[in-house]
Length: 387
Image (cartoon, rainbow, N blue to C red; front, side, top):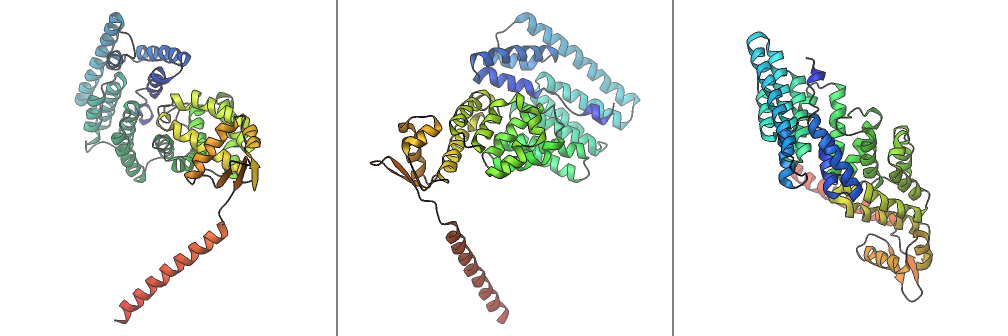
């Protein structure tokens, strides 16, 4: 067995996504997700995971299927236990470690979360475990944490993976870690860090076991859209060959970005609503931030339009976005009061007046302030030296 074969690709993260979609998607999305969920459970003999879904009410209990899964998983686990014993008697340390990892992977596959972590950890602590095997184990534990969405475990294993990679991990494992970390940063609303990781590993993405390329591009693109400037977004994401190659799988995301760049705000609002339904509402990594995300993107579009004018009517702005004047008035009032948009509304005249801050003056004041701080530090230092 090679290190490549040992690399933990179970449990299938797609099944955790299907479970999430089955709970949070539209009726059509739920039906499709449930079918894929049952199909995946049968393929991997996921007896424990199936039992947990029945207990949670995600799936209806099927006694015949439950027994079939339990028998299949028990048989495979017995075979793995036997191979572990044979390796102890007949093979070397490397083969024994690989057998132990395979057993841990199978426990993770069927849904035995705690037992899988314990099995992984037991092999990890052996003095004979190689660096590559340790990395495989950490990736396996990280994958298990992502499947069951255990933030403490995920963060711990990411830090441990960085330590091991720095000791001599190969390019493939480094790249896989960047992809995992990009998705994890998205789930923590750290979109700036996620966007940097996405751009860095976009051209070398090779982690289909994490998620398909189209889904990775979707998550990374959405992260970039909310933090990158207009020109940088166009150059590094919208026109990137890897993104263009898969846009047919994420048409609403592509439409949202291009309509925003081209100042087609009515189309942008339609696309943003579709992105919320098709992606944000059913992504287990972005669901918690869906309201924040749509709000931030609306603010970006309003700010982009207002940058082009000293003033414009509420009616013309409403027409640009394809919404009512009441909606625009409410949105602008709320965001301006919160300091997110630099404008005021003349309710009598029905006009929006922009009051963009003087950035040059702000930079000047900042420079003066930093200079004063530096001078104070120099004076204190000179006083210490003179004494």
